[in-house]
Image 1 (cartoon, rainbow, N blue to C red):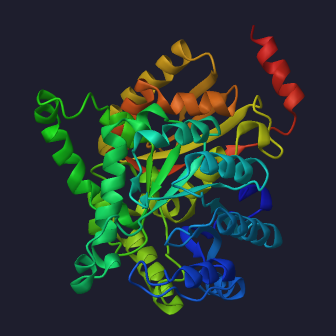
Image 2: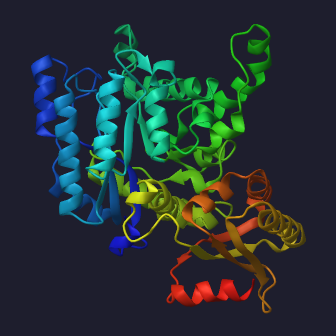
Image 3: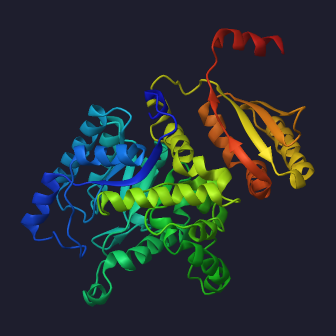
Length: 440
């Protein structure tokens, strides 16, 4: 994992692509190189690392580019290549494995192999493969397997199927239809509560959330009409949306981030480049521009480090591999952290009321929450420290889903000026056990 390799504050890029010779050769043989209406860029690891070093990107997450190869063998070769790159460059690359859909049985087999044997950091899913769209009932068994493994899923748009080629003539797919594809796939999953039912999966939505900030309010407003006509059932929007993360690849800006924050929270925003589909110098300038406005925009500045690397680090550390496969961390080991929070002065009393409520309810109702002990700086009352101890990573993940925590999180979002969540490692775990024993 990222932290295990010692890297701390470099940017983490959750949206980059691997394009292998086997993949290109297979597409050439099938006459599908231009399926997406755009030529495949050339890719090699050395150039990727060179750009990462120049731009200040510490770690990149590799996913297979579009289109989806027809051969399960090519999918396997690509996953094995990505695993080898990760191994040869510790800390610099993670990867999300491709699956040979639309064959669900083979996809499940490949998912298990990739996660359990290749130690993939997640799964990449296309919005559709040959017209089989995410959200389709036949994919529920796959999502069940991914849910058992608490997998990260990175989405990427592919050409809509079936497609009238005229759609691509005047406006290439990447300019508009890709955003429609992403919105369509996520909306499909929400309408069937796929994300709510398999809520141990965390899904990364690409390209600044596509049209979801516009689509979600419309879906909510029309749901009663659709239900009256028996076109949809009950939809748990909040549970579905809680599982979604958003990368900022593409046309990011302060305005886009503000719009995303109408449907999510700052801890669910991630940096993405879309390497190698954009020229390296353009990507470097784009990242510099993001750093600049994240520093200067008063309401975004507290979240700069979160967006550039902390959110991705937290996501990959806690969810990218199953509990029993984590290196150096057993499923039952304590999670200890000291939350460092700075509150805007005008909201201090209101924030303290929220914090006291969530701390009390968590201790009363959650056996896995051992300690939530809030403290206030004697020198500066706006600076709060909370000692958090959880019985296990699983207990911590369950805590994040509780109604009282979600109420605290949503209610205090605008009150918090700065937030740091460093995880601490006990120097003497045996003495720690004695401390808890002494309090009984």
